[in-house]
Image 1 (cartoon, rainbow, N blue to C red):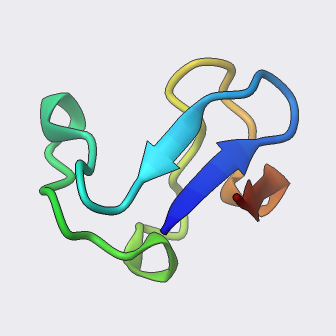
Image 2 (cartoon, rainbow, N blue to C red; image 1 turned 90 degrees about the horizontal axis):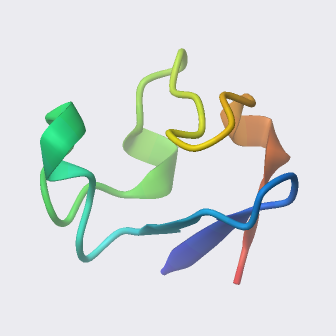
Length: 51
């Protein structure tokens, strides 16, 4: 699944993760830490929608 930040358009792809932030490939969106924020604009994960 892919999730898109409604504010800036950043795409979180579960298959890729965010290795530079120690989020390995295969990490489900719902398994991201509760304090996860968009790497581009800093909004909370509740501002992401499934693509």
